[in-house]
Length: 316
Image 1 (cartoon, rainbow, N blue to C red):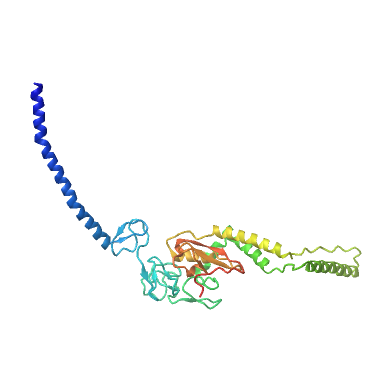
Image 2: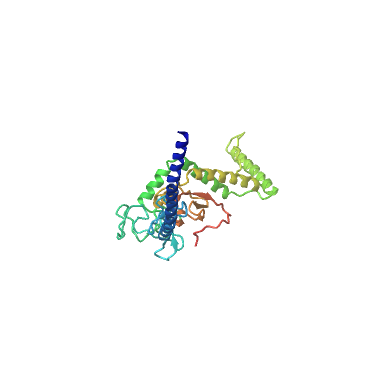
């Protein structure tokens, strides 16, 4: 019995194993024959589609943005100068023109492209002349002096003035401006002259009071605000640090609308101190977000100071 079973098993193995091996060989040949086809299909897809530089996904040939990660994968050209620009940019940094015909540059409303005036805010498509410095502008705030040019821009400024951080910002700017116009002591002789002037003032006022019948007049002391160059520079440095901290709080976060981002940044700009706009797009210094192609990626104002030599990208 045992020998018979053993012989049957050996017969079965000799019968079925060759068939299994044949099938395995066929599967291997099928896989090998399919691999060149799959590789060819991938190569065709790579050749016909657009590969996203951010995530590597293959997109349709006409795709402007990656379907996987949403990043721009194509470039377009400026209709004014032909420079290469990103598809989500609304401003050409090469020729300084607003390039979107379907979006109002003043309020961000949708347009058909043929309107002479925006149906939402009523602003002309050809530009607004600033009543303060007479600069032609494509945006709701003057790129030269910062004046609000539209009713919506003026309302935005009023709303921002209620912000506690903005109120503190204006106070610090005023203090910094006062320090900028202060005349420091240049030498010990200046300090000595200041002391003599204070004594002379006290003596004159005392004599005048006695002439009017006051026997023991009390002359109020006047504290001088003058200081040495070192003290003045130290106080200015402290004010700049405080300004920078507040400007960080008022930084423009990333948003979907370049127009709204640009308007908020211009509304939050304080007057009386030299500033520059640092964009998140290229981390470049601009005189304002009006010179940035993609302000909706975010950015902030930074203090340059009176004698800063930092290069501003969009200054002509």
